[in-house]
Image 1 (cartoon, rainbow, N blue to C red):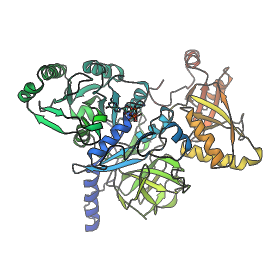
Image 2 (image 1 turned 120 degrees about the vertical axis):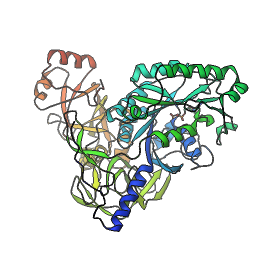
Image 3 (image 1 turned 90 degrees about the vertical axis):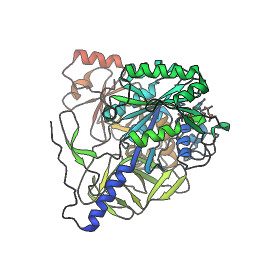
Image 4 (image 1 turned 135 degrees about the vertical axis):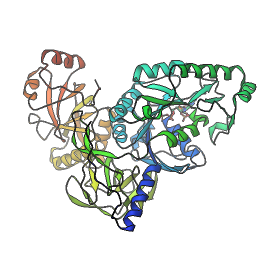
Length: 553
Ligand code: G4P
């Protein structure tokens, strides 16, 4: 076993003020639950977000926090494109208290074209809720994002949504989870009534029946009545017995919750819900508070043989945070640029001067805000697990670290393999300076990945994206924000693999393959299709050609 070096931040010998602060951080970090929802578009993420906020009494009527076109407000209207398409591209964090805990729900964009953004969000959370549409089961986007959680070792709570509508059989869904993602589902609740006839759930740990009552349009908290098995049998009869029988079947299969197995990524607790009717939503919050981990210490420094950083920044260490998202133009009235950072250790106090690890320069934190949708509030204090929005933090890029006192630099965020590529050139060659500044800025924000090579030169970098809509955002912003309209010429590559300097010359000689460099120094081999990847792997096993995310093929 490798030992993990940590610095002793215990309070022996510290001043009384420092001891109090230490206790304060320990308590606050333990109260934090920082999570994101991963799902395929339309599984009900926006609806669940609203319902969670409603339950936590952040809002009094569903629809006020979040939503798509046609709902009361949208997360952001920073670009016309978003409004027209009714999608949310921006993301931030919603913080609320629940049962003595502080829950940070980090929002993720709904459209799969922006899954790279979701990836970065997953680098800032301690747990994920995997939302599954009961009628559709595990869909491609859910699987892709699940793999990211697995690679990061984030525990996953599964919520089967839309149980109010006809859908798959509950046991079939459990089998699908086990087969497709190799996690053992350990349902905490089991539906009483088939999909489409949602009466309530069996609480598998207490054996109680929780009966749900529908409210008009699901707009208020749905009343829940808890009762014992006999009362349940008297009330709903056969469907109760069917649920008990299936639950016993699960237990005989070993599908009962085990906290250690959950935290180490072998099992996933499962809940059944109907976000739109607010059924089962309080169980999601209770499960987060009870089972999801508190703010976990972040790793950094040199890596072990499995690529895991060896050092740990304890949550009680002096303040540190890392930037997982940069968003420009969120507020059309003020052309601002917000860097979202996750507090990893210590106490953040607005106005404190931190050090920007990448440049060594001081960084003033005067303009720190909590941002969710259009709502902004000044943040004075934040603890490990919290998300702070640093307004007009021009120097901060994605993956950057800020800290006080004890230097630390958290590892860069891994990226999804891009699948769309296009050569960008300035439409007006007289505006090359603006073109270059704009491209660098979009690169720093992670709007697109920017690839360069000597062959193509500085005038025509290649933009790489996971989803083609990223190109539309890039093009629109180059024109409106930087006054440098771009021409994009699509390339026929669909695959990108990490390679190295030793393999690059040989790969570049293969017909249809091009090697380019990303701004983080990674060399990427671009290939037309998976077939070509397989052929090269077979014919040239000595060449480095690795997926960008472990296990992603
Ligand atoms: P997303 O953010 O994951 O993309 O999904 P969103 O919440 O927008 O939900 C997608 C659609 O599914 C919406 O219907 C929403 O009302 C519906 N939905 C969400 N949760 C449930 C549920 O528990 N049961 C049922 N029956 N439907 C659910 P829509 O018609 O596309 O939009 P809207 O007009 O209702 O807003």
